[in-house]
Length: 293
Image (cartoon, rainbow, N blue to C red; front, top):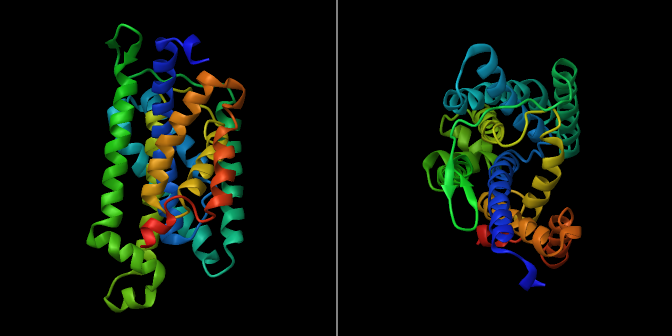
């Protein structure tokens, strides 16, 4: 069966898998940060990803803000909106069962998606690529923008991981989740740190949305289908494991691509088959124990 696979098809699918993996990694990293530091399963993450793309589209079409400006503005705007949601909706639920926050964020996702659909319809809106052209190889054409997305995703994921795991701020954030009373004794405002943490995770989702806008059409439903896969990525990597979410995102993006080449019928289910297998063998996820060690 391998003899019938052309190099062009294989290389093209691997590029698509790497691009999809970049979005899986960034989105699952945001989810892992929010859950790992706040114990909140953020079902509104897909809607916040979509909002990032819409803020970029609105900024370009109504305010003339270019793509490069939206890379900064959209995460700030959507992240600030996320902090407002945390203060108004999630904070009153923090002492209740986690199920309440899960249901609240799921309701938020439905409301946000419904409002955007009512205002702009369900049809995808185009967003022109800011980087034209590409690298023409003997066996395929590599658009420069796709390469930019992959490189930017890798740098962002590594930078966020270093911030959380290897800085004093990250140490305070992790300590605030486990022993907020001790952290507050040092004069640190723990509720404010939690709000900023949620805003940071939401901002990562919005940043992913801006990156996705020139590749996929901007639509109200662009985040809902993607989030099912992203949640599977987080479970496989280990819920709360930031590096596990990032590595698993890239691996599963490539696994999806290879499955489309060699066994297309299973391409839409391979992630969930892997998730079931991992849960059976290692219920806490692939990277959970390594981070605790």
